[in-house]
Length: 107
Length: 117
Image (cartoon, rainbow over all chains, first blue to last red; front, side):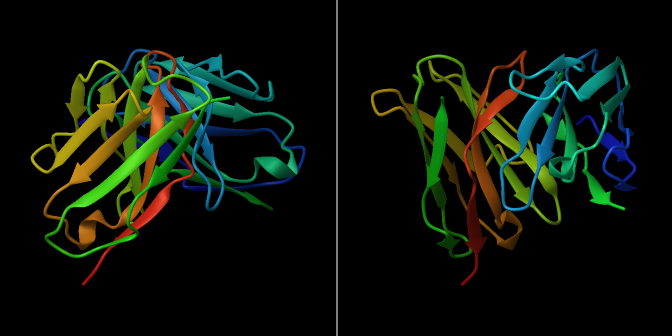
């Protein structure tokens, strides 16, 4: 299975900040990477697919980049609603696998 | 707007079979791929497998010997069975729609299944 490693595990930031979360794959996954946002008690919400494509309806403050084994999710101008846990997921190989999550906290 | 809703028992005894159904509304199940994912504190998010509208399946090898995913297009439902459950199968189970190239876009709200005697 492909291992997905996110960093950091926890990130403290303030409203208005720009933050970046990194996801590394244990082998190349081309651009077959998605990013999700999850809030407590809710299902994950798709933000980005194919590494950099913004899901319909998602704020343009979210952007993704990368290919191969290293990927980033950037959130510009943090809003109160953005404080949540973020997961990456590879879908280049079966079984699909997820990162362990990055919890974005209010500083 | 596509909506998915999981249903099934919230408590299952060890060694028994966990059975869940996902009902799709707001769109036809007769296209796309339909997937099950679970989430537990210990294992994080774990992809269980998918079924296509035509019945093609793909399962996680770690669970393959114990799982069955089926589809009923006449009812716009798909189902998951996990046999011989243990406490390690305790998790929130999500059903979702998989666009394959464009990611997993619609998710159910999730249902907690606890394995305990």
